Length: 213
Image (cartoon, rainbow, N blue to C red; front, side, top):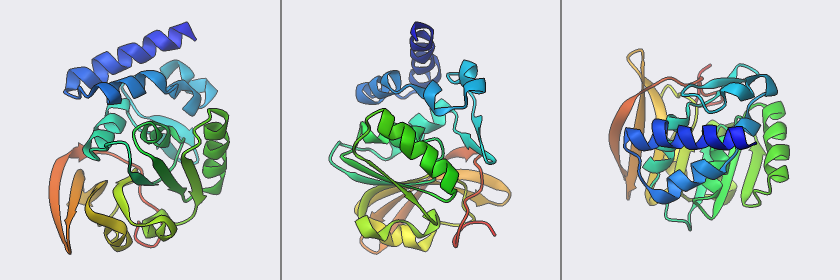
């Protein structure tokens, strides 16, 4: 475990802080969440490397810096209800749970959702609610959300996610545009959405009604 602690600290310093993310709470949370537990055992040796890793079912856990970047773009203050589309391993939800009041995370693949739910419960993340379903439709039961994050690439911004974003809220997601995937932030201003392009990224495709067929 001490080896993982040292690796985790090195990850935070070299991959996150040195790339310009300096929020103390964000860095502290990445120091605390045991990323190696969210990857298959045969990949735990690489859990803190600067790369995405496979987690089964054709899905991946994102590169640590990308998880940190997308989290920081939500600009969480601690009292928000967050929606995550694409639970995957549960790692992103674990990070969010330490920065927000409540996290609703939805996963298209039942086996992944169940596995993440069990692990998150074992790690005592009590403010995370894992749902199985079509994440491109959001989770209207708990809407509206001041913050929504999508961890799969969409052909366009799903309309239900726009609708479930509260006024002043921020939606962070990768969207394919002319054969490139762009990480975007949409900020809601009444019925208008201010869009900002952050950087190019690579994600697994979003599944569901508003995802890829």
